[in-house]
Image 1 (cartoon, rainbow, N blue to C red):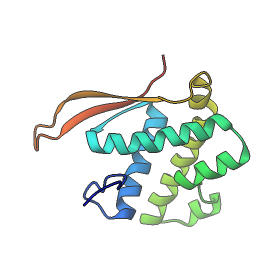
Image 2: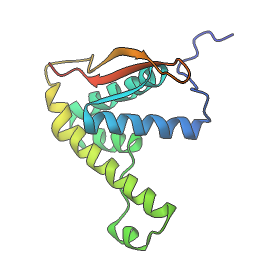
Image 3: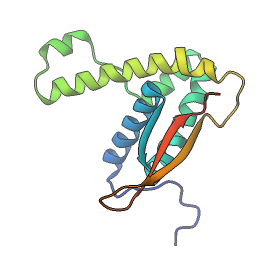
Length: 142
């Protein structure tokens, strides 16, 4: 029985699922809209709503909690010595830093008057290959 079990597994192990959701949320913050499947969008939406609520507080503790979801970058020294997969990880960390900065400085101020409902899901259609429902997850700035 599944009573009161929250969240979706999305057919992925925990570490891969969290990496996927972090990437979706990072892209949502950077581009303000993303297209993905409906279950992924619903999970990413929950994470994004929590992050925006944290960013609205705009204090040190909120920034540290947000950094747990979107990890902070490594030092510039690590960037010079990184090769291959490590270099890719450093670039990903730099994108996370940009996303955190944008979250606190650009996205959160847009929602000062709202307490919830920061995102919306718009149904687009179905994917040709497997028939999965594709939706657009966007920040509800109006």
